[in-house]
Length: 97
Image 1 (tube, rainbow, N blue to C red):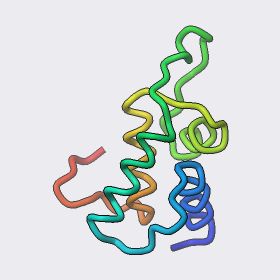
Image 2 (spheres, rainbow, N blue to C red):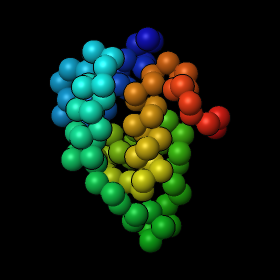
Image 3 (tube, one colour):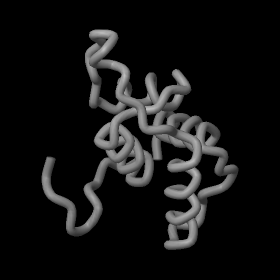
C-alpha cells in the first residue's frame, strides 16, 4: 500500500471513529460499515447550492472525509468501496465501472 493510500485510509478511519482495521475479516468489515453509517449522514444539499457532485476519490474524500459533510448514497458507497479496497482492485463479483 502506498503512503498516499495509507494516509487516505487513516483519515477515513479517523473520520468514522475506527482506530484499527488491520484484520481483513468479516468482523472488521462489519465494524467499518456500522461506524460509517453512524458517522457520515445522508445529505443531498449540493443540488440546492448548485455545487457539482464529484465522484472521483479525491472529491469524495474532500467532501465526506475532510469536509465533515454527508453525501448521497452513491457517494457514500463509492467512498466505502474505495477505502475498503485501497489497492483499487475490484472486489470479487463486482461489476466493472
